[in-house]
Length: 110
Image (cartoon, rainbow, N blue to C red; front, side, top):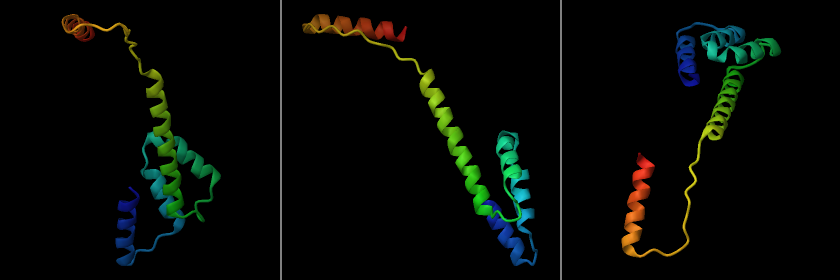
């Protein structure tokens, strides 16, 4: 998003259009959907949009995105279920090993 937005703004500036910093910042924040609403509100309330540059805003958005990804990953890791396998330490001959392996595979996939 940052790259596309900057590219569009640069082309418009080359055509003679002038933008205020605040105008650009508000446009960036308005383009975000409801998923980002909490971050948009935080940036709008705590920062002065007239002095904040686009790179800082995109950095804050990226920082928030990485944090959400980390939290999602941690939640998925907690929800993973593991299946303990019982191991028998005695040595098996080839025939009983094959039978036990078939039994285990059938139990595992059924």
